[in-house]
Image (cartoon, rainbow, N blue to C red; front, side):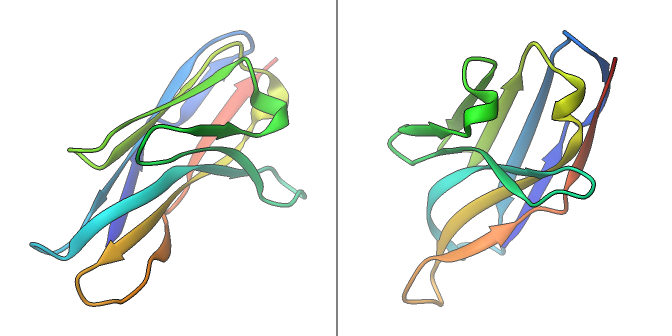
Length: 123
């Protein structure tokens, strides 16, 4: 299983950016994708939750992004989207895609992580 993230980059404070992340595997290997979402890690800080969205579209956000960031997903495409508005310099971090995946060769869900995409917000 691979998580392929895209959409990071440089943006000015107050601007917007959209991240996307797609889960893929060898043919027929993915049975289901449960929670998908994003975590982030700023330099010198611990990784923190940005938000998670379940397969039935229930969403949980980290406190620091509530009201500014919006998660959505396309279950058919196994893709999660993060719309980030009103970006602040404090949002500068590496954003990691996350997914909880059930494969055909495991009896339980496993956690998978994307490679990380850098978001830089300039003041």
